[in-house]
Length: 314
Image (tube, rainbow, N blue to C red; front, side):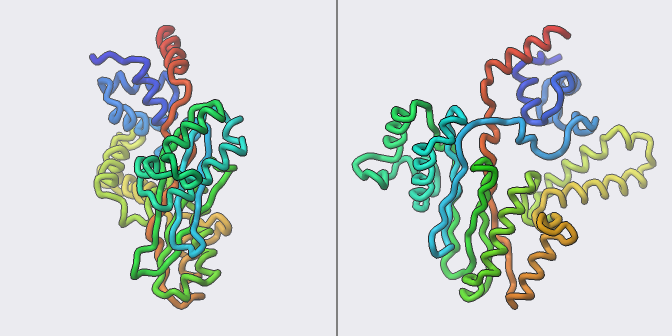
């Protein structure tokens, strides 16, 4: 049997949000395979299918910059060590300047190699080193997303920042004419859709058609293995599983969500209303959501010690 280490339990707990003891049992049942252990926990109803972003913490800011023409926008996450620094004006100014400069960068590495806009004698990476010395904490440009409405097409890029820079969404909305792209109704829809994505942490795709078949197949495999279906006839089991899969896939898609400002209508219906008003088709082309610190585990060594101590008591 594979050795189950504190590190493995810690990682499974981070991924799923399940209890420590449940994570250890899941790893034991699956020979230490993290992927299979996660699926085992879901089959046993010990973890929700959605991400457990609220269990992951790191400090800093998610910020954005949208050019005046509304056709280009950037979403950036910059991390620091403490919330105190994240609320510091010098740090906020740095993040905003990096967001503006990232308009011309496709990746973090490309951004760091650029001459710094505020002082072209140094690179952005050197400016960050100077800021580290000034602020007194380690800083890191973690990630960025850069959207531009492609030449020959029409549309708008907009962003929504929530909870003081802890969640940010960048979204591109497409249309057919420049007149519609410049209208307030169209721009308002782009902003409301970005807000919708920010409010729906399980949303990863625009519609069900975008979800890879491999994900749907994996969902079926997980659902078919749930304990509550063990004694059901195969034909009944198939119907129940298909219903659950359909529900789960819709939970992952933007257009199938209830509209946050009016729960009596879906996002699809909201878009349809706007299409009627504008007299032109409207399409959500893409979106990116950053949740501050998502995927980063703070004080990992301390938490590992905590897990080890708990495992030692078993």
